[in-house]
Amino acid sequence: MDFDFTDEQEQLRDAVRKWVDKAYDFERRRGIVKAGGYSRDTWGEMAELGLTGLAVPEEHGGMGFGPVEAMVVMEELGRGIVLEPYAAVALVAAGVLRHHAPAQVQSQWLPRIAGGEALVVLAHQEREARYVLRHVGTSARSQGGGWTVHGAKSVVPVGDVADAYIVPARVAGAVDAPEGIALFLVERRATGVSTRGYPLQDGGRGAEVQFQDAPATLLVGPEGGLDALEWAADVAIAALCAEAMGTMDKLFALTVDYLNTRKQFGVPIGTFQALRHRVADMKMQLELARSMSYYATLKLGEEPSQRRRAISQAKVQLGQSMRFVGQQSVQLHGGIGMTDEYVGSHYFKRLTCLELSFGDTLHHLGEVSALMQDTAGVFA
Image (cartoon, rainbow, N blue to C red):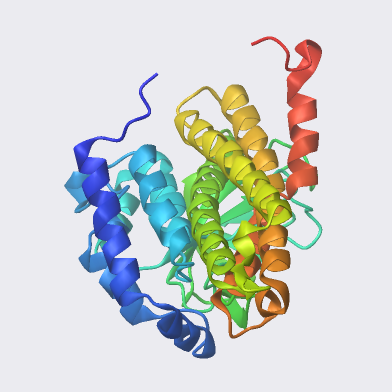
């Protein structure tokens, strides 16, 4: 199997890496964190690079690229621990609209997403769901030829500044039944929508969003709502795995550089055999994670049961690797690794948040176990 990237993909990687290195240094990131965790100016720069239109079809002003190109971009954004919700908007929301929304809705929103003019995010998390996608307490009802949505969503990316939300809501069935879930598009400025924004642990921005009989547009009916939601979650997980790879790559490089610079007894501490063994263990976890990140991206086009198992397997390995690499880096840096002034601690914070996003390691270990069925995963 050929794992080499095409010339076009390498050019895309180079363009994003140059932007991150030149325009998104640590000081600028700190300023964005202090300003609330999101910058419209930065989002505009990403749009000028064409990144916001990466997954949008060409007929709607985008580039129409696929999962591998998305993985390349996410790795480079991970190296810079970029705060802006790129995956949430340009990959997940744009993907849902591209593959599932009516043509009229696509024409209304996809060009605006591609141009960086609109932020549309998936608002699916609920307080009692515990990562279970079919647990949907938010309800929707047909009213006057349209739909209204009632309920609440938590930790919505940039939820207080987004222009619209893709909202899973229940039209029938019990709160955790797999049937009866539909997807709706709700605009933030619509009647009945209220938000409360707050900073996240990694410096980004989230919000609690309340819907009080807010007018909504039906995207996917209950016959396919859960399938579309699971697909969106899998795209998000694959993107976060790629971002984690870039984050770990950079954190590993920072750690090696520190070990080669910091001296004890007149020699760099990187010459100490015990520390070299720990670096070797970090590198091993890094490469295990890389292979599973590739695996997750390449499996996005498979049929749902295979795709879901592959994504959960990748999330388990990435979760283990993120925790190991992050903790080892902090310990090898000593006291400086825990300080807010040092960039490495912010990489560790981001890895911690990524491990908890769209299901933590323990949750996905359970998913892998449930999906193995009678083969126990030994045979394909």
